[in-house]
Length: 224
Image (cartoon, rainbow, N blue to C red; front, side, top):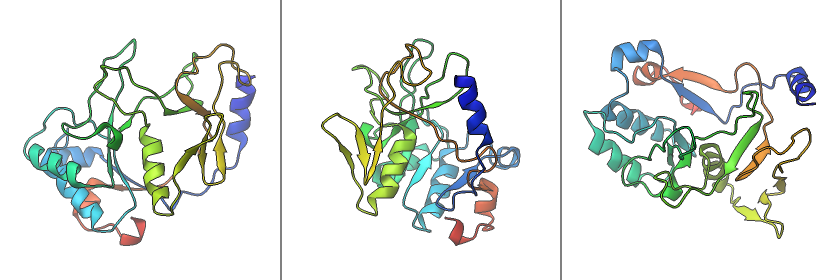
């Protein structure tokens, strides 16, 4: 049944790239020019350039639990002062230890990068919320993707609400949580708040630009 579900998802028409999103990616050229991991100074300058275009939210999908000099302290100060930048961390599990968020950032201002993987290795589920262990350094209950969505919707006055059944509601949209035996699943781990993924496209989900493009002023403001 899951195989049929996969085939039907693959038969869906690819939607156009989402104009609300922009992916700033680190390419081999960027690594050659700027080194990797990107130093704190580079990330700080990149975030500053992005903020000039007044985006609703910026997701920093790079772990920064350890300092990468030069510029680490300045980057941390930038992250602490910004109200639109969402850094990531990773919660601990059986196979891997936790990866903390950048030092000094409050748990409710970061998002976890953990995903729910099916036994066959396929990603069909999206983990939106998950209560961390009491001693977990990644102490946020929010996923990276949910944090960014909430920050984006905040501008339109949309706040998360929970029904009497403890189901997440955003505006008029209700997100029904998966149960361990939902659909074709049989006793799957339903920990946290999970929903089925609805993939936008097997191609490009959003416009992509490189870090070098940004520093070379080759990115038009409308993309941001």
